[in-house]
Amino acid sequence: MRQLTDPVNVELQQRTQVRAPQGEQADTNAVVPSDLLTRWLALGGVIGPILFVAAFTVGGILRPGYSPIHQAVSDLGVGSNPWLLNVSLVLLGVLLSAFATSFFHSLLPTLSRTWRWVCAVFLACTGLGFADAGIFTEAPATVALHWMIGMPLLALGSIVGILLTGLALRHDTLWRRWSIYSLVASITTLVLIGTMFWIWTPGTPLASLKLGGLMERVLFIEVLAWYVAFGWRLFRGAPTLAKD
Image (cartoon, rainbow, N blue to C red):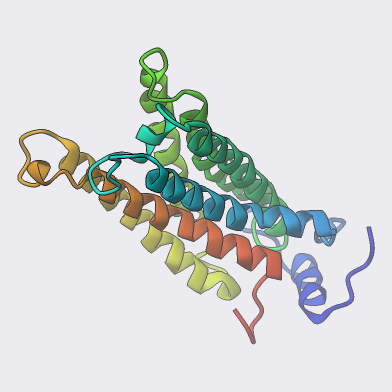
């Protein structure tokens, strides 16, 4: 692995040697990830969400009578042209898992191995939840697995995973703004999930408006926006004192 020479990576190497990650002794023999693969894997958090949003937007346009306001995104996974959504869901799962791998390696100078493992695993759960929805569609034979596995995994990643990331980074000056963003994003996701199911529940004040499809899209875009922003940040390199 080649030695890093640019100022950002030199600073990261110094940080790795000077202080131990939270709660653990620093590994002075550790090498800050410098290979291009780690950075390109981070782009999984950018490319995957963009492809997915494009897929369900185009799929909704091509589906006669489909309403993105009233109907769930998953409805596009059955019927005509279901591959457009299902392939993008599986691909999104793979790319978000790639992002989680990059997160684990990129945060080596900042977080302990335990924190990186915990955060990366939970962050990957979001991708696994989306992939599950693409494999186990709303078809009668698989609809139970679609909701019973996909939604809990999505919640674990988008609420718990992002929350833990915010908590893990809160004591690091260079990552302070990202910590705040992560904590706010986690709480926002929790509120949006609760609101979405409340709107979909028969008998609630807004149930008659049938806004479940709109709320689901707002939820997905809010969650995936965090992966896009963090993925791009990791692709560019860790933040510095001069530029975050």
